[in-house]
Image 1 (spheres, each protein chain N blue to C red):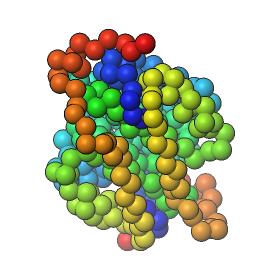
Image 2: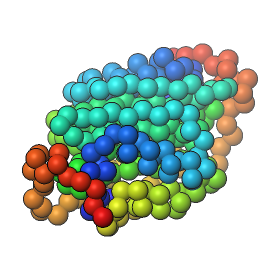
Image 3: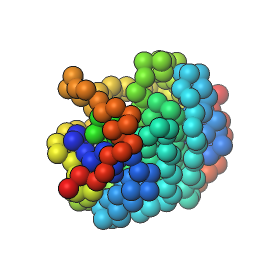
Length: 122
Length: 122
């Protein structure tokens, strides 16, 4: 996200509020939230959701932030999350790249009992 | 990472230990570590590093885990991190995709004073 508002990117509370709002409005189910303030500025944060995670790293001096919206369910409304981010950070220009993850072959997953009883492979 | 050991993927402590080891051995500077155990199984975790983050999500029933190694410094030895992960999870097959992030134009970043004094853009 380019051309973001410097003041917003600098503030841990604001960055957290916007990313949490993006998660909520996309209907992701929030599990936990962790944010870290860097000195003299810059914020890193993660919202762990049942469907995987949202993360953000901000570079206020570049008016730039990088966000990952990682999810494994079609119920997550990623378009809405992006809207919230654009509005929240005053984004002037955004580049969105979709990366497909873990394209599994048509396989037969292990049953619950098998997973719970699995020992260490040797 | 495909064909991982089910038992290892299931165990929050083991997953955390391996991802933290990967971060340390890649010379990333660890800021904070958060892991979450899902029921009946599956682990999500994040290692926040000064250089950004490492995350993992495991699907023991598919012998699969998805890892992000997100870093903004050439000092992070990502090859070593991958080696640690492959060894730790007993990975049989791995797909590595490099995604360039935030390719900024040759710009003049704001000075520290400008960042610290920036108000909210209107």
